[in-house]
Image 1: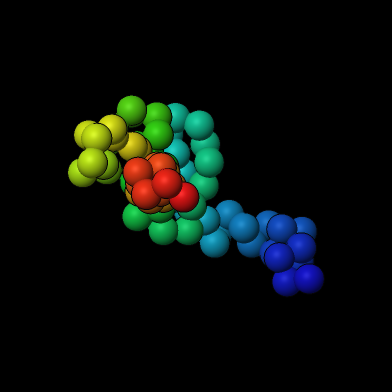
Image 2: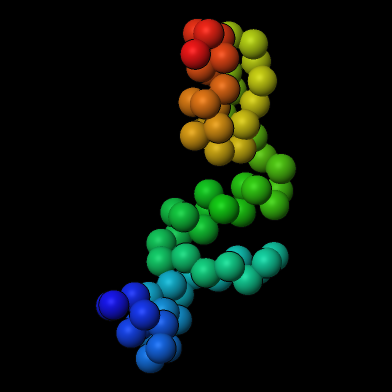
Amino acid sequence: SLKEQSTQTGDEEAEKPHGCAECGKKFARTAALSKHRRLHGGEKPHECPECGKKFGVRSNLVKHRRTHLGE
């Protein structure tokens, strides 16, 4: 597959030039790296309007909000 070929040829380094200084994980986009870095810093910018609980990742807030709907 194309992914296997890029990994075998070392092209992955060029495809993911943005590395996390804390853990070394690499990202293709700076926005993805910024989002990832919040996990290390404990930043939780996404707050539930129902109960005030905060989350570092928006998708976790979305899942949490379902608990208020009884889903």
